[in-house]
Length: 497
View 1 (cartoon, rainbow, N blue to C red):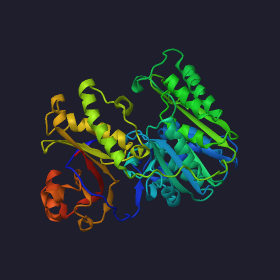
View 2: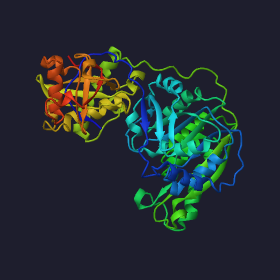
View 3: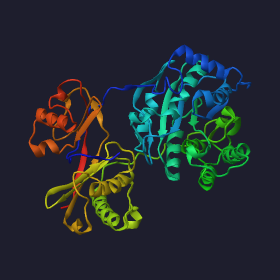
View 4: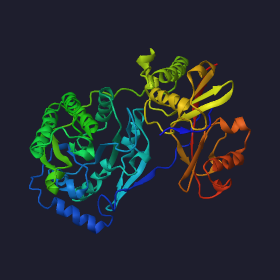
């Protein structure tokens, strides 16, 4: 979500914060919050799986609906496993947290469910986060079912084999190029003691999902549609799978995690359709129906042939900055003339690798030295160039403090861009560095942000800064003194002369 705030300045780094614990946000809704009731439900799911355990399962595709619907299907897939794993990677789609061309992995200590605490594999997570394609955005996991729904199932099943360390990953909307890069990086993190779980439901049919490709013989035609997707999965062919999803429009919510998994696997891997069911079958009503597949992959992980593609340097060159400023200006002109966002190619602008790095950005507009609009992102949900395009438009026409910019004003505007680092928590206001850190204050559901430039421009000290920030959040001026939390970030700031 874009946010209108003040403008920012300066660069720097903050001390590494302690690792947090992620906690279940589905307990009591998607599954029971009481441990005994949850165990009883899982026991029922696993009671009649009827499969023989194997030692060579390296990956699964698993559904992620409530256990009353997809629990038995997921249990049957896990029942095929007859061994322990040191590391389990669970990758699911981000249903609610908007993100483009990134994957989200939290730098956290553990993930707690009603069945207890699962330690996170911090070494693997740190390894992934060395690549800018992977971003540390723990808030994305709040209320997200795709990863969390797998965890009590894994805890329950693996209890007989010992503990495991978890790597939870959420995938945003990703291009085929990003899928390939993500798979190459993740392939360096797997070994014979690793299980990878791609979390996905399959076709979402009916008016609730705005997908009604047929109206007769729904049960069989749904199965035909889902089995077409499985045919590409069975062939370990990510390109064919993506082509099928695009061609049919099949509403497979986790198609990107599935494509990443297929891209990680060697063609020598073997697939097995363990179970196929639908919610329509469970409820005897196909007005709206979701399909559930459990697919197992056996074999070995490919031998690592070398390191994954090295991380792209996020620092912007002078040429990058000039290109981004030109991108912002041309975007505003294009939008005012066409009423739609352009692509860089529409504007004749080349996008460098550094401009593709996921970063949040603010775009600030001034007219004759006076503020004319300032809106930006707080978190790196998309590549920097896409954030600049979106927020150039937002600053021009969606900053509610001003009337929309008109075409006749464009030549009078000057543009400034602030490319942000990821906000990190600090223990107290004493750790905020004025002129270096931007600040986010949160208290009682209210929040506000100042970019790093604000305090020096206004000649505020730390108390004045936090007093003004509290008021901006709709709180009393002294609200920052007790019960407030703070995050800091830095900004790389550049503008037109």
